[in-house]
Image (cartoon, rainbow, N blue to C red; front, side, top):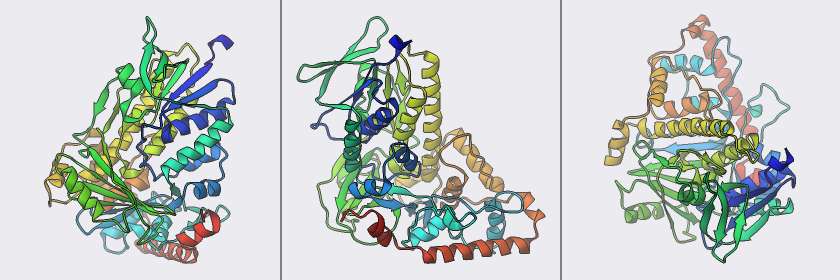
Length: 501
């Protein structure tokens, strides 16, 4: 059995994907096999994935990384959610926040009681019932207060903004301390084994041949191993996700310092704003079918909060995923496995879940097809569910001010998403599928925030006296406001806990 154990793992590509993979494998395997990472300083990483979602805390905890140290070294800030501006219609704004909706209702979900009162004009907007949203809009920040069960302060859930290149650098240092060997070099050829077509080795530009048992492709959209060598194939989702270009540029800090990512819809796409300690990360995601590169650049540069700090970087992409994320003795992680635009900050999360899944299905040299098939099926499920959630943002709009939004509003969508919207329109019901990333609160905030309204609500709500419902809603609203009032500001919290200064 020892002879069947994987002895040599080769990771192709660095950046966030490569070094997250290296760090996690080195932590788990504890020098039981060699891990070698090959990257070239000449090949730039995408490096715009500066916003995360809460599960990143699980990854960092598993690596036993001190959160305050990490944020200080990566110029990090906190994130309580994403503010969406001009998506449902021009002038609208809502927050898709982390955290939980209040519990403890007499029967059924909180949001159904709120739906009844809201439909009757007796309740404020949904935003007032999320501690994350209320705090974020006031520029407040506090970590979860675990010793206050039942308090909204126990429902705070955060993620981070950080400089992705600094995060990769931090993990590189972590990985090398655990024995990961980095090789500088550019791959010019991949050698396949007869007769099964498995990868035997990669050849570097300076002539070295690097052999391995198991190869992990973190080479980005080029897919050096998974596509260029193994010809795995790609599912193109451009008809549902029409944006195919991005421009990224940093600027000086300015404006509000809220613990929020901001996504502002423009005439042919949207602009991100990510506040870091030392600067603001900005980008414009757009469709080349509806806007030229020059127009997109001008629109971005005219909507910065401060002085531009670098030349814009241009990224072309096709939304979709590899037909197989694991093929033969190669797994693709990060952008080599697929690309879903950063609208809901899922890029780094998809790296994290792929690494976690890989550890769960870590192979030996037999590379049993049953393990590979299950890995791929789980990856497909995750990608499809996130894909549907992203499509919802484009589809659920009343905007008719541009050809782009007319296309999005009228486009056909996957049946799986059509059914979700229909179920919500009926009685406000949201039924999450097993283990999908975005749960009830997320779907609720986006559908409500972008103007989808149910015709009714769960009839079980009527079993509770309406006066009692209104009393509960008023109490929850008041308690959340009081909790937000006592929280420190985002800037104060960073200065106390994780400032880079």
